[in-house]
Length: 199
Image (cartoon, rainbow, N blue to C red; front, side):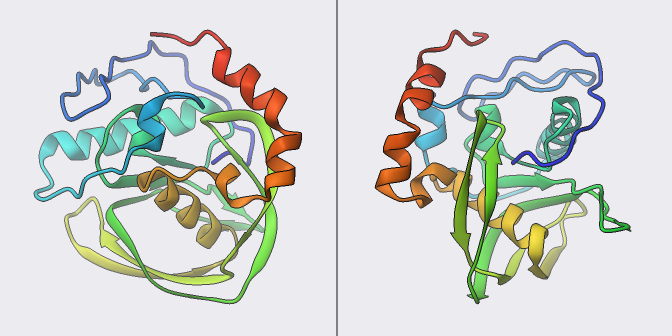
């Protein structure tokens, strides 16, 4: 999920094949997958045992997020890996600095309220829409230290977590807008779907 503008790092793109077999290079961000790629519609699988390779993947996802220059959330499916893993890096919001967050197997335990706000997506560049989501949530998952944690959040953090957990279920933010709005975006979505992408 994009939000703020940051300076990207210069690095080569690594190779990820879309399933569990991942080739990683320590210094390279991963290749983002874009609208039209079938992996974005697949449900990610739980991480049964968090290995060192999974930790490395999380670190590279954070690097990839930084390299986008404006991303604040990324799900493993967005780099072609069908594992229930998401990373969030809000940076500074309203004079509060947030540490990067890594969550394996995130699960929404409860939600309440309702709020509409604009969303975009790194996998659907240059398209935004107002999306209605719960205002407050409780999420449980496993952090990079392999500890179970519970997060109570609202505002931007809640929205990003909901957006990224949707990705892990094969759901895109455009699925949560009205049919009329989707039809209005149809030409742009078709253009994105047909755009040449790195292999």
